[in-house]
Length: 283
Image 1: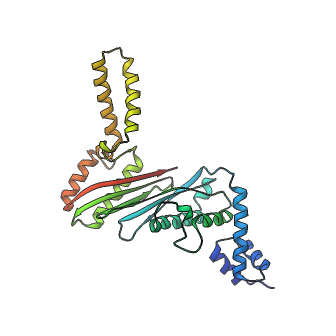
Image 2: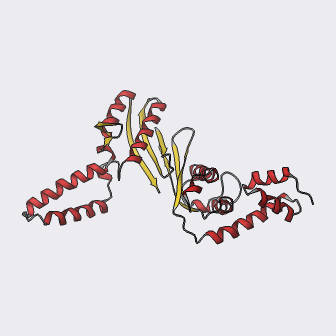
Image 3: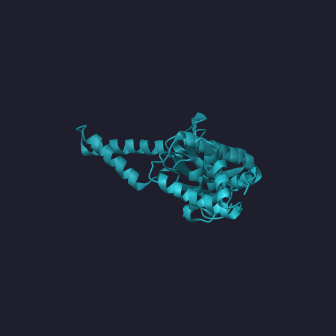
């Protein structure tokens, strides 16, 4: 049976497989489009199984933001080389995964049925392996939502760092202005070492570990116990300020802290602005 270019193009548009793979699948199936899809699917699974043992240490982060800006999602997908992480097929897959998480949430992502198309997320990734030619691995995903305000999203141009910021706005602030501020805060977090929004949100385990290190350092000073305790507490307070968002100098204006920036913008925009949550991902 003669396979036409139009049939090959149609199958490729549906599956994303290579031209020659589509042509062979159609030939093997006698031109039956549904059978050809199954042929390609089986081939994709076989290829993925062969590549699954190969290291996937590179990758990129995908972002999707809801039209109302009240929710957004980040997805981290690994591959073998930075070359693939930068190609259009990989980026298209990242976009689909991010929209999937935005729609269905960040729990058990590989097992989710697809919001766009048929099958599961895991099956979609398996099929993509034969298209991009490398092992692909879903790493993790996060979704942030606010009841009022916006979620600002930012992914660095390299695709290696992504941030979501849930900025609550209580009042009648201009949504565009709040969104711009949320994005600025996301960019700040991308460029900074931030562990929590405020001191009271810092992981107690992190505080205990840092205090242990500071006590060991201070003990070598030979000073008395009371002085050592004061030294440690002072250094610990400094450490906590350095790793909490509200206490950091804002990257676009180091003369003011993020806390002061929020206070100024709350007054200027006529709404109480509060950072509810942030998520940072990186490779």
